Image (cartoon, rainbow, N blue to C red):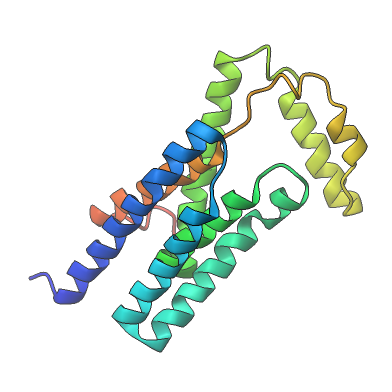
Amino acid sequence: MVSYYQYLDVLTLIILALMVAPVVITDLKSQRIPNKITFPTILIGCAFQVWLKGFPGLIFSLQGIGLGIALFIIPYMIGKMGAGDAKLMGAVGAFLGPKGVLIAFLYTAIAGGVYVLLLNLFKRKQFKGFFAEQYHTYFGFLLTRKVDMLNMNNTHNQSARPRLCYGVAIGVGTWLYIALALLGKNQLVPL
């Protein structure tokens, strides 16, 4: 027999799935994830968790927000990702908490990898040197903790390259997490 709390968990996942949909559409259209979508999503996620679990729900939600943002803070700091992407992952964390946002992040990374490979395959000329550039930027950052902004701004073909709409990958990763959770298989990633 399904309990009242299991229905509320399903409702939480459905609300999150609906909140992520406009972000994906907006990111595809304008290559931006606006605060007018992410901040209300964060607030609704927190409010919903507080309604479900009280003060522990608030802590759960805040931990998810913090981890969600932290997962994307380094790519944001080195200019490889926008702040909207980090805030969106924080919004996902507001609903899913720290463990859920970590699993959704792993699915997002897989979706992002597939997305970049497909773009690279279909727009090969625009992405010439993309992976080598990414490798050098991250490796240089890990060694020196500094970003070579001059080198990043002068890379060839960068201005001709289409921008990655990583909100799409976050949406797909989150929807994959939700679908697996609704099917009872949310532990494909053992954490």
